[in-house]
Image 1 (cartoon, rainbow, N blue to C red):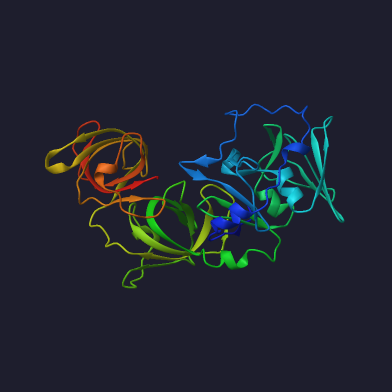
Image 2 (cartoon, helix red, strand yellow):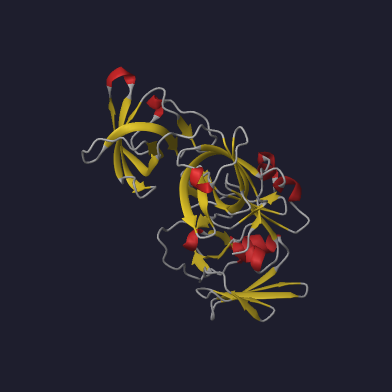
Length: 353
């Protein structure tokens, strides 16, 4: 999938003051939505709200609701976005297809068909157009791969579509991320690490060209990275259109001291919290293991000195603020009881907030 540039930040006042373009009046009332998992598009994940900005003009969420669709691609209402970009759209009820025209450009698409037409050529995007609440939705990749526009997705939820001469200044400041390694996978050519979980995170491709160093500039390898480590990542300006966004890491700086033993990890939900001696807490976490040696269900003791970090802003969270139902990434050492589930001491807790 072709990567695209990342938007660093969009001033909130732009979204408030921007003119809103509604797609609803032009969509035919007779069109019935296809069945989907929920009756209303999901425009958030874990509190992350999506906002659409077209050539610097913001859309109110109720007018251009976005959601995460198949293959983790962000789905965009095509009429609202395309008309804001100057395209004329014509809907065919008989064929369930949409035609887009601007100057000498001609494009078309058909509901349920992964065959996006551009000048009589078909471009597959691995996701089909959908009818949802009487609006036609396409994957975000449509605007880059078919319309040839600049597309940027901020981990904070702002999606920007613009002409090639727009947005480069905002993107230039979004090439550094700080946070906690929440996943590690290996491949023949390198690997991938997840930084700060899902809702506010990013996936970083690691290759032979990625420089990995310690805080005192000692050279490290991918295998030296461990779950729960705090890092600063310098990465490419471009990001793949997924949730969380994916990009290539240029440099990884490990800001933690390397642990003496391997760190294990479990991502899941806090199912139970009980008080322990000395003001500490005992958490029962159930979910998915983050390595082969980890556990799907783990019981961890968390003290006031245990680092607890939120993914939204990398700020510390007090142990008393943890609550049942929180989604967390829990990291712990290999010294565990032989009980089922095993019990151990938390090394670090990262909360999806």
